[in-house]
Figure (cartoon, rainbow, N blue to C red):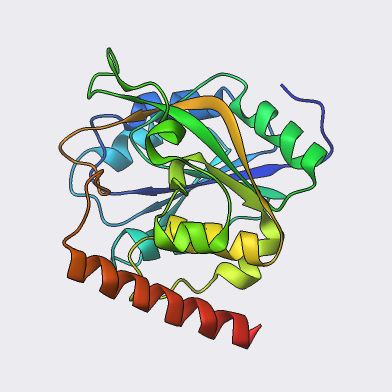
Length: 239
């Protein structure tokens, strides 16, 4: 346990994640203090996801009904219920390293930044083989708004940020590609984001991943960026 006078929130979006959810939740709970919270927005799973979550019988786990509008809005729903000083994003199928929270909080406090993106090891389906020793190296990850509009280096499952950013982040627009790029850009706009080189999760790749590690066709990439820039400018103007 960590000696601190505040609590943190973990925001997780689930949908039919029965294969890996138990291992992921177990790894998260090992990182949490007794007053921390794991907010799980479940988007009407039809498998055993909810049943597995409920077997934990842990007061830190709070299950809420998802909006059934896709992964972006499922995460937005989880974020809207987070009350901690800092919010950590979590997918349903990765594995957190021990002391991830402690290490990230230390950097957030020392750097006085609004957000953190840490590195990770990309592993295969059963987490027995490294497919990529460093996501940062693969993506040439660095901070910078223009850089990350051009090519997204914010990986949602590796992001933590100050709850103060929620007022800028929510609502998440329907017509942008993914939530992580949106969150990262707004944390940079209204503060600063530090890219932390320590690898603090095993990022699992399998046939059921929502996000892909491939490029869209050029026209689709251009359309996505145009939509993102329009929404980003609208949000800045609003605030």
